[in-house]
Structure formats: C-alpha cells, structure tokens
Image (cartoon, rainbow over all chains, first blue to last red):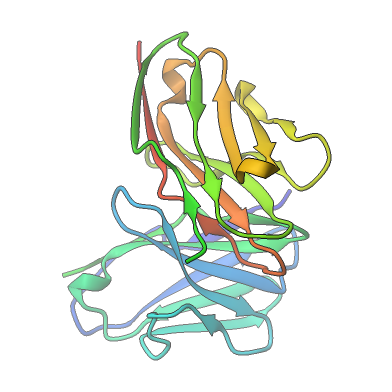
Length: 113
Length: 113
C-alpha cells in the first residue's frame, strides 16, 4: 500500500512552453501533498505544500506564478511549470502524506531546451 | 536557520566494511526522523523512521539508526555493507508542528566489490 505515481516520468519541452506534471496517490487519500525539486547530485528542496481544496503554500523563493499547483481531489495534485526556461530543468518529485509519513513518487525529469 | 546536516558527502567502502552515516538536525521540540535511500535511477525509498520509543530503530536491508536526543543526532549504521548498498542516502526531519519534511544534503555511498 501507499503508492504514489507521477506522470510523465520524463518530458522534454521547448523554452516558453508550459508543462504539467501529475502526482497521484493510488491506494490512499492524501489531503496534503508536497512538491520537491532535486538538482543533480543535490538534495530535495521543498517547493510547496499542496492542500486539497485550498491554495498551495509556497516556500520562500519559489515563484507561485511560475509553478502553479492544483490539488483538485484527494488523490491528485498537479504542478504546472509555466513558460519554462532551461534553468527550470530539474528532477521534480512529489510526495503524499499519510498519517505521519510521506510517500514519494518516482519523479519527473524535466528538460527545457 | 534550522536545518538538517549530513556530514559526509561521499563515502567509499569495501564490501563487508561497517557503515555509519552522520545526521544532525537543529530543530527544537519533538521531531520525526527518517532515513531514505535513492538507488541510481530510482525513487526514494524509506529505510527506517523514528517517531518515539526505543531510540535504536531497525529498518530494512539490515540498516539501523540511533536517535540521541542530547546530540540532536540520528546516525545510520550497517554492520557489513554490500555492493548493492551503493546509493544516495538522505536523512530527513519532520519538524515540530509541521507537515512537511526537510532533507539533508545526502551522502553518496560507493561500495567496492
């Protein structure tokens, strides 16, 4: 149990386009999901906390207009990278909270050309 | 600033050697502590966790960790490593009254056969 999926696993896009990444909790409901960003050979940096039915809470320095988060249901949160630029290329990981634990998705590799 | 510190960036060991990876945190109050492993090309997997009770926690694959409250530490240990333990190891803390999780910078473990 407690499986989290992400789609797509890998995406390549042109600069200026928008990319949507989906995070789903497959076998449990998650009122809270989290979005992380991981640069090569670095740790996970929390970008935002996504709460079902309300606005996401962004960490300091994360542009909310650039990284749009929607948590429309108890099993789905989406991250949209708007007007992507090469510096947005990274590994994006979501997690879903269940009781006192977080369960992580496999990540999405975004490459912006 | 409150943080999670992993002192070793890259550890290289031979098979059968003993392992200890350091983790310190600077949050006061009651925290939940975790160790995650990320094998090459794979997503984060939970090795073990500490919420309360016995400060010596046993996890999967022969790993254990000891919570020492007075030292704000949660070091990861394994008596005898295997080549398959080659991976990135992350210490994480769920701060007091927080839903989110803060990660250390990670320690890359390379086990030579």
